[in-house]
Length: 209
Image 1 (cartoon, rainbow, N blue to C red):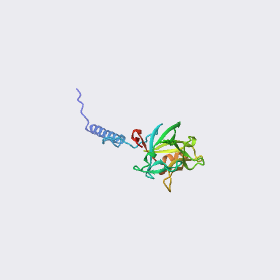
Image 2: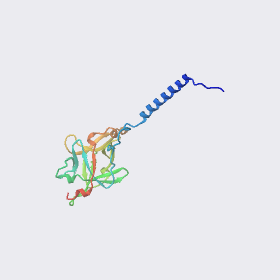
Image 3: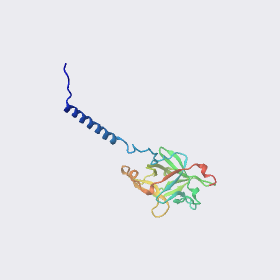
Image 4: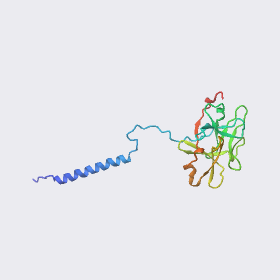
């Protein structure tokens, strides 16, 4: 009968190899785990809210600290200056009317017999006006940058310069901002004046306005 004796050196080497593999596995598990692995998951609101057809919105411009509104005295102009408690708050309601693949007209809905007014690009390609006549100049494409929304005109200034709704540098007028669109630069690094926080409006809230 042959009695097999264990080799202490071999057992030690096997133990060290097993220990090394265990440590490597633990390290790999930590590297692959998400940063919140040991925290209670929380719902994140850092996301865009896509514009949908026939929904009413208000557009807040953080740079000018105001809602986009139609001028109560000049129906061809819009401003980024309306506050929450302004008497003109009811002039900030904008409906997104779907006009083509990815395109919307942004329309101030008329009340008390007033016509619907579309935000439009001026034909010379720089200013922003309001018009009652929909056309290619009233069509905008929503783009999304984190929690903000940008509105790019269907009309381009030239081959690489797009035009975006934004706030004027010197006053509270809503205007069109030129932006370099080479390699989607404007979408990756947008002009802060062209960023809007979009709020969906339930028309039940509008009673009495």
